[in-house]
Length: 233
Image (cartoon, rainbow, N blue to C red; front, side):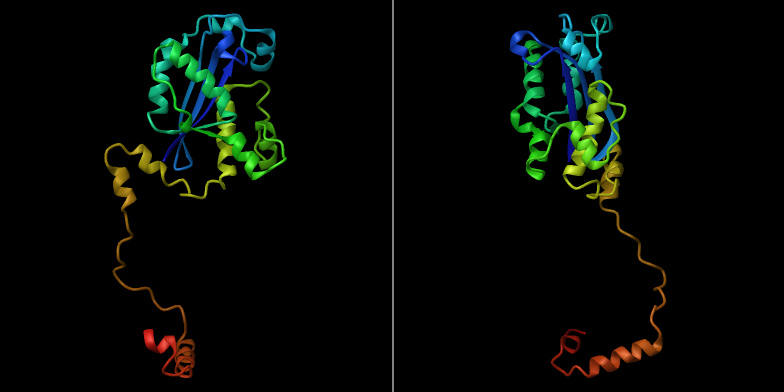
């Protein structure tokens, strides 16, 4: 199962008011394990950054002026997230609203709401009444967010990926072995999925003594002929 943990930074709160995306960051997970593949792009919003947005993101007009517009990178972004990967987003309605506005303006396919998993809603179900901000969840799970002096889309995606894995129970599902399947494009992944241990050339020696084996046989004899040990061996 492929998932994309995603974050955007914007010039404001409403695309209907002319606000735009200025940064996208995304991290790929495969069977709940980070593959190391990421997507990161700064975007020229074609409008001045409001002072309050600069305070949050630290991205200024001079920095963004030579960056590509969304229409220039939209297709590459869609290629990265794929057609059916689950999108894991903190406060998903906000990011999806902006992404679909940008995709619509660029005349590119938009994203259905069913693709987004909202980690805010997930956290509130798991910890009702507790703060569900990204910083609060990092503190809860002991995740180091000391580098988060400003909101940055890629850093926030990386932190959110760690938070998400904790919310669903950590990295236990496959202990990191699934990355072999994801990265192997020449059939090796399918081979690893069906691999079994070869039969030993000689059986392992018994790990109980003869006295212990004799004591066990005597115990079974004392259970009678109707015991499960006698009926099924």
